[in-house]
Amino acid sequence: MSSLSRSAAACQRILRPATARAFSSTPSLNFDKVGIIGLGLMGHGIAQTAATAAATKNLHSSVVAYESDKIFLDKGRDRIQSSIDKLVKKDKMTWSQADDVLNKIVFTTDRSALSDADFIVEAIIENMDLKKNLYSSLGKECKAGTIFASNTSSLSITEMALASGRPEKFVGVHFFNPVQIMKLVEVIRTEYTSMEVFDKTVAWVGDVGKVPVKCRDTPGFIVNRLLVPNLMQAILLLERGDATTHDIDISMQLGAGHPMGPLHLADYVGLDTCLYIMEGWVKDFPGEGAFVVPEILKQKVARGELGRKSGKGFYYWDGEKREDPVGMDEGVNME
Picture 1: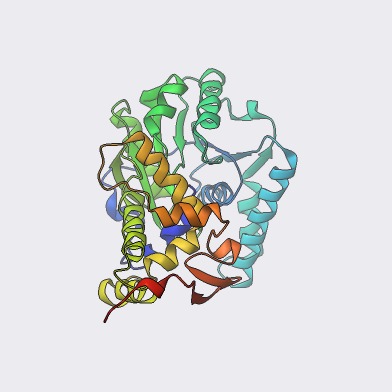
Picture 2: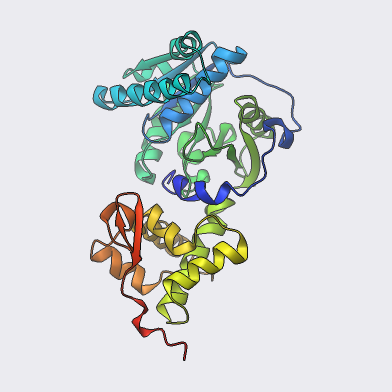
């Protein structure tokens, strides 16, 4: 998700700053033409990041930003323009530099423009059937040397790789939201991925100014594999009546140094998103004891209590402002 990308953002700010190249032992190996499929929440940020590297480091000759629908293409272009305008207003970029970045991006609804790309990052919605259909088509449409990379945060890289018909040229590149700010990128390899392709992707992530970490194709990769079960355990703690919403969250803030507690974070991510991820993992990996779905999570989602975006979850919300906990703590007796 790329769905849970925003969810991890707050927690990752506790990481120590590090230079983008610090975690990459591979030499700089550039892709000349980069394609981005999907210009939504994640895709527009990836396109901007690649274009910035192209403009400031001459890393790519062009970045092709593709959406099948012109309405979504225009929205993506507007998001990039707005993001760059903010950088200019904060004196982090000049107007001339902003023009250079935008001029590196080719916006198109013509997928054939991607046929000769060296590297394509897909950032469409988290639906495996849609992704597999896309990669099946791309595998036939793109030149033999094109490398495919999915920005999924929770789906199997291996399944998509096999659908593409070129699994040795397939990797995962999980950026975090907001892409323009968050440094971390998980680079994922399957048993089929060639080491040359993997090393080249790791180097590219460093070259565009991010910090790459390496991971095998395991559910949730590193961050979400650790984060989502943690959220489920916090919900189970509340469900059993072992502690209150407030005390669970404040404990993880002050005891573990987290910027926000797990129930607060679950609300912020979206309880429906949390449920979607965990139900998928439970179905696909029934023998994994860490993958459980709390009953109260199902109940809340069924009632439309989705967290911040619906105004009610484990807390009440007024827009971005968190209010009091929802009345679930009556059964907690500390006497």
